[in-house]
Amino acid sequence: MSDEVLVETGGGIMTITLNRPRARNAITRALSVGVGAALDEFDARADLTVAILTGAGGTFCSGMDLRAFVRGESPMLPKGLAGITGQPPRKPVIAAVEGYALAGGFEIALACDLITAADDASFGLPEPKRGLIAGGGGLYRLPRRIPYNVAMQLCLTGGFLSAVDAHRYGLVNTLTPPGGALEAAKALATEIAANAPKAVEHTKAIVTASADWPTDRWVELQAPIFEAAMRSKDAIEGSLAFTEKRAPVWTGE
Image 1 (cartoon, rainbow, N blue to C red):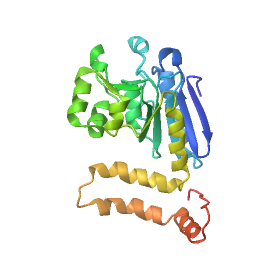
Image 2: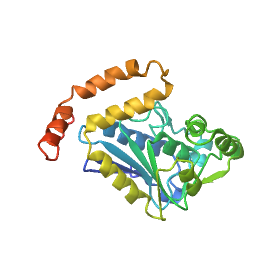
Image 3: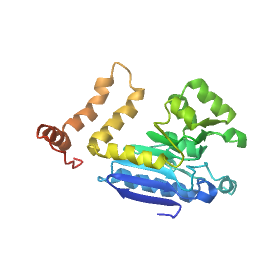
Image 4: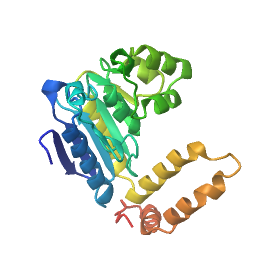
């Protein structure tokens, strides 16, 4: 793994840190590849249930490295920016945001399932100010996560959304004092990782896919995922543990 991306694992959690603090964690090709590789490993490992994405040096991510862009470098991968914006992992990912999450950095956060943020953090899609557009899913996801007219204003003006307002709109799950976003993300991740791994994965699959399901077909479309979950060994283990008044021992099967 490149030293532009730091990875730690433990307790069912992978923590991925964007590590270019002098450049406010701006996204180079190498950083994008490194995060994408870490997320592929996260999805493939049975011992990991949830991931956290954060940034070093008090900033989440300032977006694409414009100097690298001018040189002709592209951070886009087959799965999108940082290997997440086009095809997020099957398992849940939490963004822990300090400072700025701008442009591609905001799009990475939007591709995550949950967001914790310091109360002085800021979000934004300022691409139009540089003659660009947000091509990593921001223009698709943001109007589905906050009120349409608010999202449209942010997209057209390139203005900032404060973490306090993002929390008020429901985009940010947990608001913390400055410096507390990662610890809040770890607490949330620990709570998720205590659950059966496959049950967590199947739950995310239904929640994300069902946004496009017709209301008269949700039972039918949910059925394959639901049935797979009900046949799992962990479903039996969870039920036995409840009746035997003990903590479950998950196998991820």
